[in-house]
Length: 52
Image (cartoon, rainbow, N blue to C red):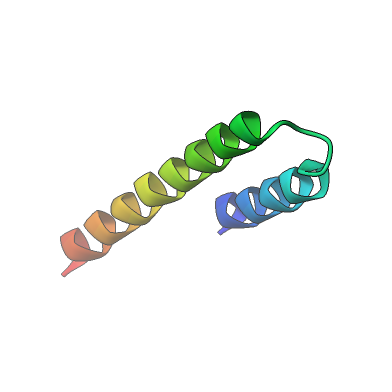
């Protein structure tokens, strides 16, 4: 859960700086965060399946 909070905080910081960053940098950062969240969700899903 703490990882999700950290990711949301990071997204908030990046969204605040979008006005100051070039578009390609913003898109790369968004893709990295999205990929990290997908990996986190897959890991959590796999852990939930293993508990059954």
